[in-house]
Length: 159
Length: 159
Length: 159
Length: 159
Image (cartoon, rainbow over all chains, first blue to last red; front, top):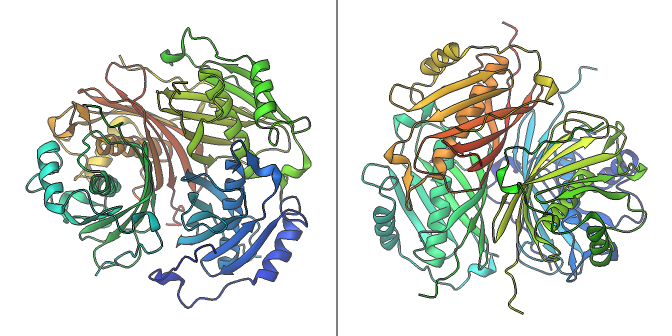
């Protein structure tokens, strides 16, 4: 029941095709990032298109903090994952795209349930991608956190 | 022809009334901030409702930088103005609401024209307001900059 | 061989005593945050004084990313831990001090070794603490990441 | 009486020579940015070396806000100026170095006096520079604001 962000008006994304399918993304991540993306990690890719992605972290007891809330680092990790999936689905399997910076605002206490992150590319340049992420608790309409982040995109190699 | 951001789905804002009209806002700002908001400053409030505001900086030659673009500080100033108007229209004439932090991502080179900033409150608490601003060049659909910011709201005095 | 940041000139910190010792901090964290701070987590508090703290994450294979570097979320988690320890050592055992926002800049690729985070309070107010963190790879003089963050400090309860 | 930040331990800056003198910087800025840097603007460059710079905004009534404090946009503008001077003094007259993002934390209310900004480069890469700025009121030891910012450095042209 999480909200589906509409991206109308974001003209740059219109009519372009994802560089990778969800299946290709999962295979790439399992091969390149086995420490982060492995059976049992609880991460799933729910949607990946050109310029946007939605991912989910299944609830696990280890993420809980006092008061029954989900830890901040869990949300930062999930945002980072959503950002990377959005980059990959837009420009293809570039293992070396790296986070330059990430700014997170914590808005509400997340509930003791799955966490969902929706990433959207605000600007995709040749060298940089600027993105935002809204993080939701499963079933809630208001975001629990908001992230902006910049990625550096490596130059295309001549080889 | 700038885009009008739809705020559907931001349930907290629904059904609440602005604490001040545009006319009340202008009178308050002219009285409290005469150095910033005065005849000839080129700032106008285009819309102010509960949880959101849209403001405009009229083009002036002094804002120009090499290549015919608008300076970064001009956009930061306009974002700050939009944030303050959104706070005022939501909680009323609180001169002492102050910016705690402001994070701006520059996305595209603004054109040599008016600049418009649309602020939206992401979370309005008793002590803090977290907001975002999209900044546009007049007539363009893609934002030239994106801002997130937190304001501290002073405790209500007993007097 | 990581650098020890000198905090001279930060006059607000001078002559004040830590609210908690390292032993008291460890006991508090083990009791309140058993999911994060437990035997085997690899986190240690190396120093905690009024206004500052230094913590360490022992190297573990699960933190590694392609190219032999440490993952971004590992650094964000460690920064968050350093921030919380600096808050606790300055104001005492306040389980409900919460992160409002966190901004991280990734500067260099961390080596495949321990990661150390040094937090410093820039401003400690009644309601807010603003801090910065420098993150280092063990044995390196240049930081691998820099963080600024704001914490909300709950009002002292009357009870 | 503002503090002089010591930059010891920032090994990358050691032993390198500034790419431009203060006089060369002033001439470049007056030529390229006449709208911002002109006689009467009140901006001065107090120090510019490889990797760091200190600049000053002379007090003027137009910067004042209610309560006798200096406006936030004044500090953002000054930080941006300090950042650009630090970039120029490190890599030379590159008019097209542009701000990607800027994050400012407001720490204390600045006094009704000159404002000084000290910029330091945290990381100078081929494509990006990451910097921080401490902003002080004249005569005060504690910063009134802290800024981190990333600049994009254009590729060296073949010509």
